[in-house]
Amino acid sequence: MAEVVTMPRLSDTMTEGKVAKWHKKLGDSVKEGDILAEIETDKAVQDFETEWNGTLLYIGVNEGDSAPVDSILAIIGQSGEDISALIGGQAPVETASPEVKVETTALVEVATTAEMPAGVEVINMPRLSDTMTEGKVAKWNKAVGDAVKEGDIIAEIETDKAVQDFESEFNGVLLYQGVQEGEASPVDSILAIIGPAGTDVSAIVASGGNVQPVAETKAVAETKVVASAPQVVATTGQRLAVSPLAKKMAQDKGIDLSTVKGSGENGRIIKKDIESYSPQAKPAQAVAVASPVVMNITGGETTETPNSQMRNVIAKRLAESKFTAPHYYLMVEISMDKAIEARKEINTLPDTKISFNDMVIKAVAMALRKHPQVNSSWAGDKIVHHGDVNVGVAVAVPDGLVVPVLKNTDFMNYNQISASVKDMASRAKSKQLKANEMEGSTFSVSNLGMFGIETFTSIINQPNSAILSVGAIIEKPVVKNGQIVVGNTMKLSLACDHRVIDGATGAAFLQTLRTYLEQPLTLLL
Image (cartoon, rainbow, N blue to C red; front, side):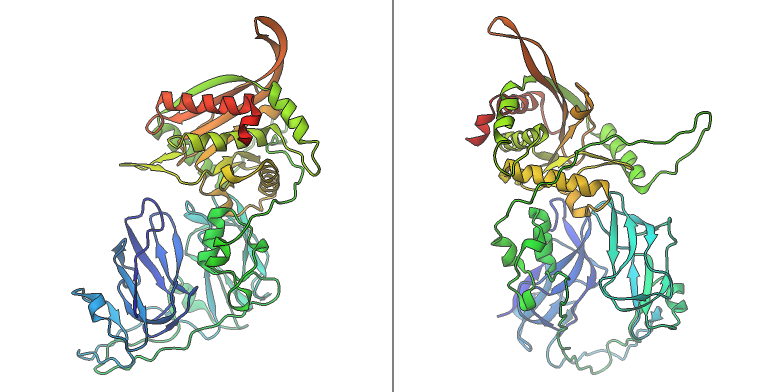
């Protein structure tokens, strides 16, 4: 029986989707896990993976066109199956059957783009994060004329969030570099061209990368549509075989794909492998969450430093947050005496070494679960209440600040939080973080206590509606039971977006957080 595939809702704010590219043609065989199309949402372009086996019988949206969420995107079924009842009164964009006669006058579509030479592949500037509009080539690892193999790192791309290695998916020779080292280019513009040595690619460059494999004709008086054989890509060596849907699910859940055993063809990781995955704690590594950035300045000499892509985006996003979200601040001073004792006891356990920051993150995650309004985002005409608790942890890097995200933090234990924070902070400093590891936060924590800062306020990391600023633990005289004694206190500052979080709601959240930190055993209940 044929299956109707509707336009998916790929983000909370998505109302319609645009088909950026079809990966399957009418009459093509389709298997579960195949990429059917690339769907452009209001935030990013995402691969759309089919969950059915069969033949692509109907395309409801032309490449480059948009359609509302839940409208017919495609129909998959058995070759030759009658799908007229499923289409209803809707005029089909394209339908397929073993033999189709088109009742129309002869019409030839003349190609206005460059013809793609055999074996040549155009590589465009990739979109490596939801907010990325252009990428900067930090370094070329291959020069024009160099041989390139599948899996080779051809360049390092600097996005608005990190510098990432860009890996080739093709074999051949690097024929053309579309972006000079140190320069930036828009997403989807030509980054490079790979193909057989000596191939003339000047026409491709002149057309801006608008190419087609061969000259195409459409809609002749009588046309036969023949289904092409499905492509099978064999994964060898150390490369990881994973379906796009499984990859997206793993990113959302914070799962390391190298620890997942695939049950698909040739060991490919598919959707059910992620759904049935049981997480394991990562080994801890010693690294500070934040560190000062040192600059060398010569006395009496005024110099200029060009802004990095990251610095420009930080400036833009923080200004947008400060001037669009009405910030207000709540501050509280809490006793850390019992937290200090609890941490000392916990760290006596084998292979365990947690920080006070780990304890704060755990307490924040548990408090967010009790106060869902704080774990929400402003979305113009509505407020989005997030089902997952994903805590972002601010990390200082030489170019500015990044916020790696702990997915499903409320389900993590101390060891998992500690290991994840240390791992991501270490990779952030060496620019090894992936874009998906810095997306999806629902709340953020910034800690300057290690620098002796007692109290400070932060700018909200949108689309979050709050950020917690954590100060140093200070030993000082305090009053307990009417007596002046030596105690340890820490100041917390909560910045809230008043559009989402009212004062009483923010105060209640801080009270719960205070209880968790002053009575650490309550975190275990």
